[in-house]
Length: 296
Length: 296
Figure: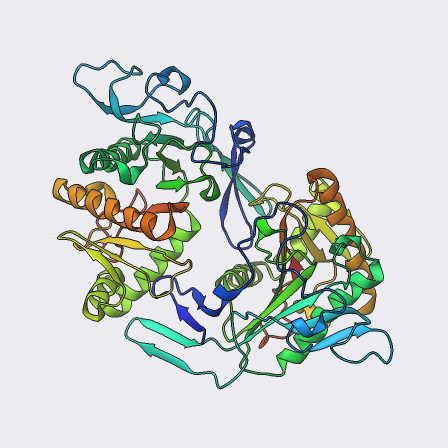
């Protein structure tokens, strides 16, 4: 059983997981394909994953059979498990909880040869719809405080299978990095009465030196204090703290800008490894004035 | 000229450095040797590095000539530069400063074939003495707020040259991670009136399940909330916030325990890549009751 443990000095929670040792990793990425053979995410291999939790597919398609376009399944080697009760415990300096939570994989396409940015925009939209639907579903469990949606592309970015996929981890605590962001944004709001991300968008649009791309609903910038070369942030232009409240027209434009940005990265860097993370507000908050969801 | 930039949301300072693109990196680690040929850190190649700032060597040895055992030189491709004045600037949301600071390399041995743990303990002691001496020297510049001493071993851990070396970066701001640690330790002290690291040492000694090794002056533990498999912390048993106040008998025992721990890692993991960082208190503080220097 995995366990969540809190660093007593800085307060960071860490997932202590032993089962993930059994994952099919360790293969060197000598070409575009890595991971296990046959690929468990390919069309026709549905029985090689745990039972799906949702899928977009052809009308009348049976669950766990071919015919899907985007398919969400529990991670076979989960960092956290959804079974049982959440037990919180502490002894002297050390706080811990059961490794309670969810770890799911969003398989973005049945085609092994395609990357997220190669897909039709309509299919990329379904990937983002899947994120949205899964968050609404998991939100029903009040023990889950945060849902982290992310993608690792490439073995160097931490992916253990090359077939295009994203992941979701739902935890009973808010990650430290999110807490820092919430604290910083809250302090700014207390002082200025404005959302700091809205101010960043306004400032970047006015300066127009770090804006990479823009459409009606989203703006992509290289942040002022980038940690990595080619770091990109994508922010909705309208203030909104909760990703899962994304509207249809926004999903359309998010798919459009993400496809375009990833294609640009491929063009400049020759299909680089990358990570993206959706920065969202914690589940127990709703409609925060000081926080603004975005993708880094 | 490099620049320090502050993330407006979470307050993290980032070094924006363009010159480091010119470093000799990008070579795949196909064997133990990687980096440039001939190796600038080898005995006899002293003219391939900037002029040394200090060295331990044979009596009567000339600076920048062979005959040294441990040699400290400025990084040829520094993340920060020590020249000029420190200029702090801000515009709306965005704060920045000149990339003022120091970036030095501690070459741990003239012998290309040896790793830190292969050296005689007396030589490992000189590596730690070098850290100590450089900190005392750089501390004289009151613009420098923090001195980060660290080692990357192996290309996968970020080393660009295979010849055994450590590094030091002195900055005009305190890194965010250090601030978090100081804040957490201070809060604990306010509540309990004790150093949290001293309490961790006492608790681990009493439980004796995470103690890896111990000598008269140091204890090595695997922390309760490890972020990585085989994570190790080495703490001085006597309370002390400032690494640079380390005493002779402690340097002897620090060299002993570090050599032993690194040899154990080599034995179990077949010479793994690793990073170590000395967590030290900021330069402007002295003799803090709530902070305790250590190596992670």
